[in-house]
Image (cartoon, rainbow, N blue to C red; front, side, top):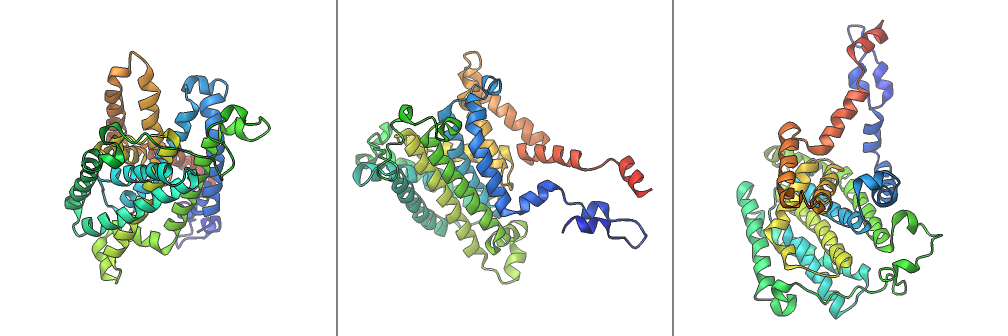
Length: 377
């Protein structure tokens, strides 16, 4: 569909204006390269706007570490949305992949290598294997039973780390022996922020850690866009819309669900590994059910089934948690404030924050009836 169809005459002599009108946003959204390029631009200017831009940063009161953390949780939400938003499967156990990858990356750094890239690869591989095992069992049941099974597996992972495996995980104290080494084996990027030359792009981006996290974020977005535009993505959407009909046309629904589960776990693994690189610490709470609940809230708040929405939801959630709650007058009530925001958005706009943006975009791009009448005349 393109703009040329807007001028095709109808049978009654009119013009198919609305059916043929494709907005610029829709064309950009359909182009993989455009989505990736826009993501790279947003990632590049985000820390400057959030931390250093005149006036704006003063209002937002953001800081560099939070900018990196928002991207990390954004990757987590992006992967979770691949399962919930495009396949319709609600998992309450994704903390197992996030926390499992975090522990795997942390233990790997202490035992084998502190290379951030190898840590992310190892943590992601661990999450993929774990997702394959848990998905193979959990997807034998659907609906609420699937959700409860994933919750049970997540809690089992938590208690394994808390007690039976405390010799490896350090129990309730969390894993503190994380050793993040040089980037690419020679660049002491994460330990020498002050020594970074000012003639690099760093003054805009903030620090090397953000560049590392931002680059992986762009790669993750590119991967998700490729998946959604592939036959796999179309099947995921078909399963979400009508699983029975997808089965009737010969699709192996269970196999596609398992693949969606594994892919979602892989993105959770990337995010969990980056979380360890970011904080050099693995709290045992990273495996607790509240982590699974947080990612559900972030995804729903931002907008289920959209590319950008879950990442926006992650940003809003973390902003309230880390910046708004820092106000001494608000701090005791920040959970209440977040709950009110969540209820207000979901009650009034079930499609989430990104849905609100979409409505505003449609209002701006859709001409009024008077304008259309004038055009017809």
